[in-house]
Length: 172
Image 1 (tube, rainbow, N blue to C red):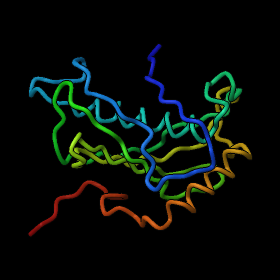
Image 2: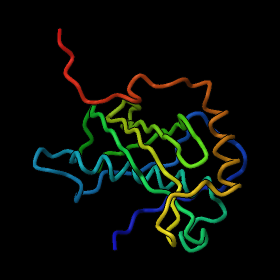
Image 3: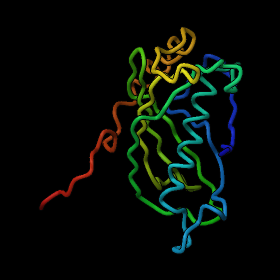
């Protein structure tokens, strides 16, 4: 089974805008023939941010077992590539909650290199999902409350220009 690195943070009620829950380095197995982070592994590192956010929102229930099957499923992803990350390069991921309803939320991640310059962005839509019933479900009450708090704290950030973009050619 795939094991994801876990970045655990306690819920204190303090909500940074944006959040930085992941700081890491590019691993050798993520590097491609061009000697930089392979495009597929931008999703790997953004998924680290998804898990870090989910574990933080659920704290102290920071494992699948502790959450008794009340999880999320990613139903949509969009990545833009704006820079490079070489093997061993340090990076951080800023996370912003863009929208939310009773069963879904949208996260926006900005992958930054060690100098704080963007290397990629990722928008991801999550759906509340019960691992036992294999069906969509509403967020658990504590999660719904915390998501609302984060959305309120992140509202002042506005919507990033890269968020919600589809794939299209811009004709000049």
